[in-house]
Amino acid sequence: MAQTEQEILEGLANIVNEETGVDVADVQLDKSFTDDLDIDSLSMMTIVVNAEEAFGVRIPDDEVKNLSTVGDAVTFIKNAQG
Picture 1 (cartoon, rainbow, N blue to C red):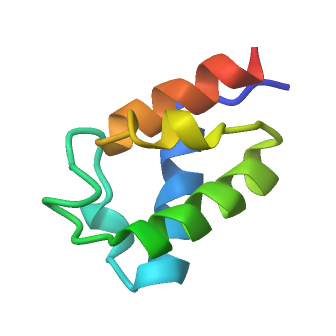
Picture 2 (cartoon, rainbow, N blue to C red):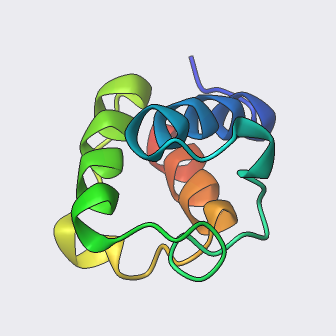
Picture 3 (cartoon, rainbow, N blue to C red):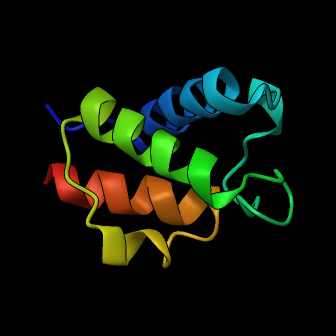
């Protein structure tokens, strides 16, 4: 069953927190993964893999570069869930 944007955001925030230690409250839709949350490319790939498992979606490597903000990722996951 497709999840709401808020459920995806909460799940993604938990994944980011587990990988990087960034406070869950800081993971907001308008935050940039690199500029605001200071997530490097290696951590981002781990976050992507964990998000794929958690949400049951596939995020192609060539799409990852387009996911610059948390909101981009939430929207991608929501659409991928159909």
